Image (tube, rainbow, N blue to C red; front, side):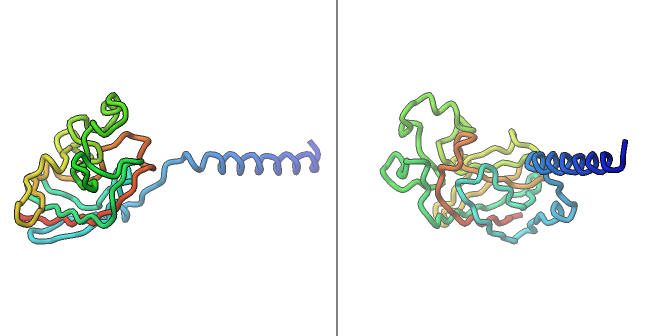
Length: 188
């Protein structure tokens, strides 16, 4: 192999390698440093923290670590209308809130089988901890609600981060609109 041929070969190899790296970069999982994981917050009794919640987010990792058996209070303040595609009102003709709406408002009843939790309303605010997802999955309708403050109370099912989402169909979160501020406090 001549020097000229070897030079063309190595240029071609570099171009091919660069192209492969660029094309696969979108599918390579992100590397999370240990400092990112350590940024999670553990609430002490009486502590409170707020997170911004958008209904278009499939799974919002709040970065808040719940501790098994401890009681927490959740306060939802809706800051913009919640809209699922074209559905802007619940069954009572009111703006959609954290309780969502029934399957009766969907154009085809079989669509109800596609929502993430069939036991809960469409667009209902859902809580879960990935570490014990089946034991921790709850909608706000499952939580105790204080009639005076309007806050929700629940007990953590395991140690681990809290994740929030509205009950919808995977792949259809991009047509969701709405924003809320969610405050979480630890009671004990």
